[in-house]
Image 1: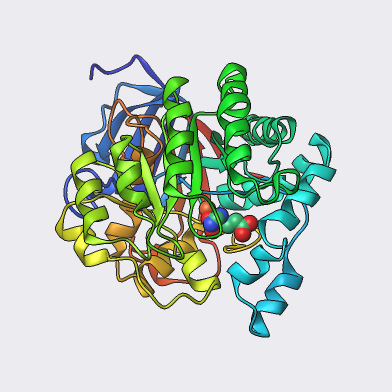
Image 2: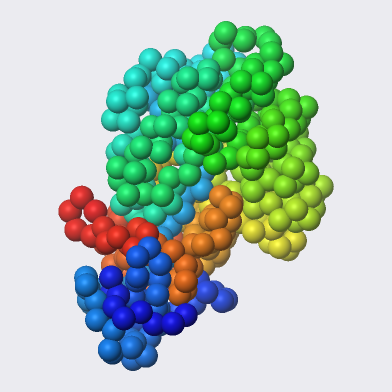
Length: 410
Ligand code: NIG
Ligand code: FE
């Protein structure tokens, strides 16, 4: 890349975990120069071109920079909470039982439908802000708590507007096939008809969805129903992803792979067949340790087999009021290592460039000239600290598309 006459932003006094090449890709005593929304120069301070001045510059005094975190699976736009359901689960009820009684996802649907866009934004803003405050620069947000056309579009629109407001790159996913809404109780097929004939087309027309997702499981939708949703997405040019093999093996991951899915997510019940299909299609495995933890699952996703077959593994918060009420991507790095036995660099890759790939984004997730200038800065002594600690937040701020967000309010 040719050098610019001037950097818009220059960050010095940083050790870099570039994630470029093997392992952390460490550059000690490094610097990053940005032009517009792009990294124009990155490397060791001693190699920095001295004749390029900067409009905004900061010396971070030995902090660490990583690629901005990418949280590639959240349901953070919702109203209400599910603390009562949590108490019931503590007394022995299961997630699936509560769902079958019309609680679970459907109780959040009632609260989310009742909130207007302003109230929904107000409830959701602190969650996106908290995720961003730990260094996330790209966040995926799903619908799936509206379960009627206008309420689904309302969720997606609120997600996009919160992204603009907070300066976070929000990617939206239509998840109308999340549960059967009360109006269609006992008629899942009729609901899937409506999703395919009305809601997917409306989401595509409005430009409010970047992808389409579904929940393929015993308390979600069958493989055949999911296939119909994927056909509709394909007909409208939208890529797909899938909540697959979370509570049971429905062979959903293989179906997702058949449709060239960007990702299959959860995967505790993933079979060898599903692994092969994902490996063949290049579908990313999105691991969600928060849901595994909160639902006290005991069956681990087949991490070793995924690794052995070269299936890329992403890590995300799954921020949602039912199975993963967290807003901490850093805690998920810890849980990915502690519960799922990822290595710390694997976990960070899983929340940067692999997560970006799960969103179809190839322009971010490493510190490399020419990539988007999404950079998180942490007050740590070495990068493994990000996964070692649980609780607390060492993030000093971030560049988001080249824009500095440091100090109060970030
Ligand atoms: O990713 N499994 C389905 N969807 C969410 C949970 C949604 C909810 O309980 O509200 C998940 O775990
Ligand atoms: Fe989810």
